[in-house]
Amino acid sequence: MPDDARCPCQSGDAYGSCCGRYHAGARPGAEGTAPGPHAPTAEALMRSRYSAFADGDSRYLLATWHPSTRPEVLDLDDDLEWRRLDVLRTEAGGPFDATGVVEFVAHHRSRTDRAERGRLHEVSRFVREGGRWSYVDGAAG
Image 1 (cartoon, rainbow, N blue to C red):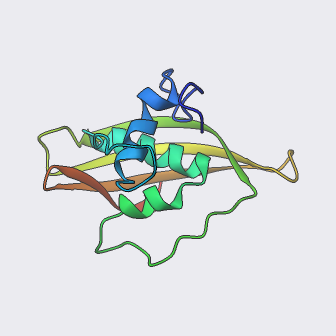
Image 2 (image 1 turned 45 degrees about the vertical axis):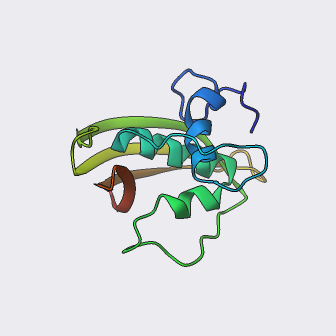
């Protein structure tokens, strides 16, 4: 995704100065990128993970998944086009908290059948260890 494109997380910022900097930080060896910062809050991590789903970046998703619940492989559905993110609430998850919860609704549609639409309503749990936030798991909201 180009750095000057609008960020999929709908912050209103450009991708490169929003979620893109976190995505680059999870790819320390990627050509032409320096390790970037890590998401400072659970909500920022959740938004960056949404952007990774929108961009098809399974590598970032796995890198930000807590090792205790992370799958070995993540196959993303290429037919889903993620269209909108609505953050409904957060609990804790600040830069000095150890845990956090973010409830959101992510809207998508089919790339092959544009009339087919859906949404994912999830209450996600996050943990901060060693100064880094990780996604633990989520339950249907």
